[in-house]
Amino acid sequence: MRNSGIIRANEPALDYLLRGLKSADIAARVRLHLLNALDEGLPTEETIATALHMSPRTLQRRLKAEHTTYGEVVQQTRRQLAQQLQEPLRHTTAQTTRKHDSMGDRMST
Image 1 (cartoon, helix red, strand yellow):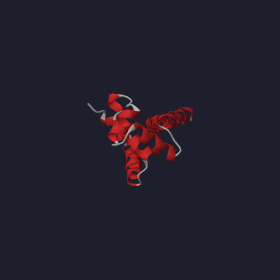
Image 2 (cartoon, one colour):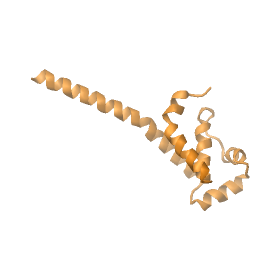
Image 3 (cartoon, one colour):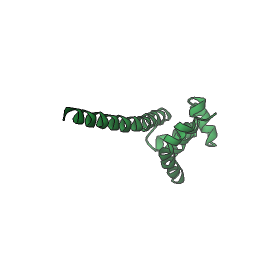
Image 4 (cartoon, one colour):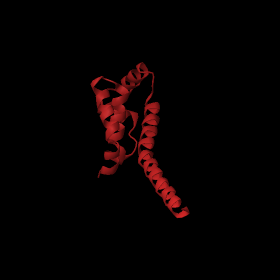
């Protein structure tokens, strides 16, 4: 069962990743598979390689050609998700703070 809230929150990231697919960016393709597997947990490098129709060693070489590794792509993806999930919270917190500030201004007058 997919968490549609997480998927909706990550639509901008998915769009970015899909654009990367068109440019044959292996790291972007790995990120897309990582995001699609959110519900099942972290896929192994071998699982991702199989999904991309290549051997794990070929995946490693192609990522190395892009100056990255599977582990680095996983960390970048986690960081990106965390930032995207925090953004609505920051927006809500800022709105709440402004509301409380304006209520305080009205009460002090």
